[in-house]
Amino acid sequence: MKQIHFIVNPTAGSGNHPINQFFLENFFDKERYAVTIKTSDYKKHAKTLTNASIAEGAAIIVACGGDGTINEVASCLVNTNVVLGIIPLGSGNGLASNLKIPKNIGRAMSLIKSETVRKIDVGRVNEQYFFSNTGIGIDAQVIMHYENSNERKLISYIKSSLKALRGLSYRNRITVEINGKTIETDPFLVFISNSNEMGYKLSLTPMASLQDGLLDVLIVSKMSRLKSLVFGALILFKKHHLLNEAQSYQSKTIKIRKASQKAYESQIDGEFFNIESEVLNISVLEKSLQVIA
Image 1 (cartoon, rainbow, N blue to C red):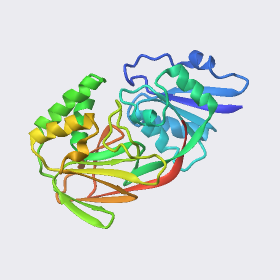
Image 2 (image 1 turned 180 degrees about the vertical axis):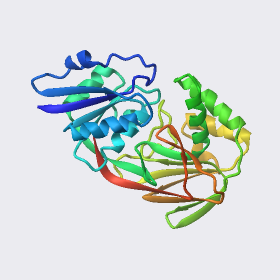
Image 3 (image 1 turned 180 degrees about the horizontal axis):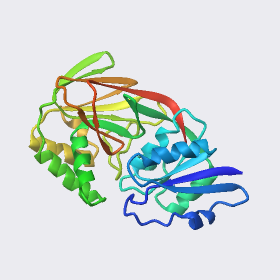
Image 4 (image 1 turned 30 degrees about the vertical axis):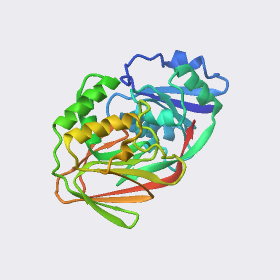
């Protein structure tokens, strides 16, 4: 009998979903599957629950939530034989969309039963894993404002973006080492992506792949607020590369150094983090996660 554990974030998206023990029994035959459901109650709780499920012998662990919940669950499964399943309940659902996992819960459950497994790359920034993307600059500020809002909709991202632009300042000069090249910049954005989608079908790295052994990097240097608004509009049409300030790269490793001693304000898979470190060492772990997709 195969053990499948579901780690559910009850507040993901609208917080209104039907996932409970009775609902799951409609999809998973008791003769073939032993189904366990667990609820995460606070940040990083999903990691604790996932590690317990691994110890209990789960063969598949399903993250039910947004990209933050998926990150917590998947981080425990890197370089293991335990398979990740995803039920996208978040607002953006960037990784799930890239993996073509349907937002319809019933269809997503059927996909998990199919057990069609892919091995995908995983990004790492210092000791923290990421599966979609990580970044410093305006995207981290947007996420910070978004987390402080009470809405979990696209309009909240737009409001948070405008708020981040109003408070934007350039006082964090950094050095980026990539492909043997050293770049000094006051960044508007340094965005490192493993996947080709951020969520809501938006992308800064449309050519990125989860299986090419490379990270796609977008470095956008300092620019005026007016040009920042132009950049935002160009993103909607996937034309942001037309700006002279935007430079794209692919690499297996990236190193970022900061002149000041302040922590890096960053986002990792759509969650805000302060990283206390002088250096960010970013790398890719090739095909190190098994996921149903």
